[in-house]
Image (cartoon, rainbow, N blue to C red; front, top):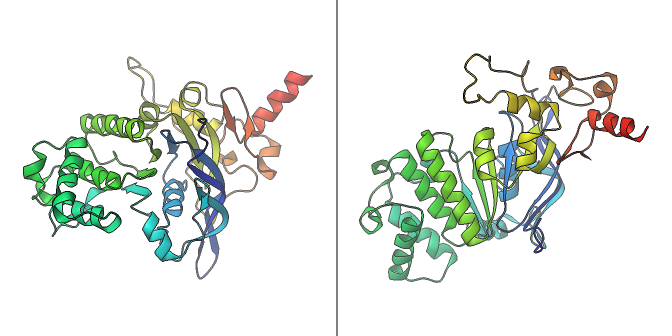
Length: 330
């Protein structure tokens, strides 16, 4: 954390989805902070609660999903309990969102220029000419060639990578304090992924924005982020400096994720995998939710849910850390 303190603070966030038969809790007691200029990666398998956490922060949970507990602060202002109209003013002005599929963010019947200009004029006092000039500057900033000509084109006239750059330009239009990027590189070629990663890192550094990068790809997280939070079954199971978590993970789930990444030169090795699958929100095991898949689980893991505890290089919610500390104190 920088001397400026946290720009985004999430405390004990709980998201509930009521259904006819039961109450689902896909995000349970999640807490983290992001400082200005810092990129926090949130990683985990599908169903871990990553995207729902991001949606809760920006106030875009789809009904009947709701924030049922916890607090969210942007600087010193609490935003999780704001009326819809007030939250709408913050969204776009102080918080920018980059979605996984650019086509869900861009209107296919409007030109790129019109969408950028409308976004700018919604939150800033700019006339048409000034907004148009600012829109062209934004396209240049995110690496769109011939921006002055392409501003009058439609989304379908851009490649996938270029559309994602346009979405990033939209997210940056009003110089937001916080950017939430939900799987921004998933649908892109590897070479384009690298360009988008480089762009996100540069923008975080130059604009001083806090970035929450949601991804299932540990490679993207390792290349992009300063810190990483690993989620499993709706909870953060490990958090720390990205290099420490990648090189010396403390939680067995994180260790499994890292072991499943192919290594250069290891042609004869079989890819490791984590047995089983992520539990559904209506079937989360008692104790540590990972214990049915964990090769190191013991009796306590089945009955008592661990909280995050400090380990070497990161904090992890794992009883193995408590065992290690007990042995060290003997």
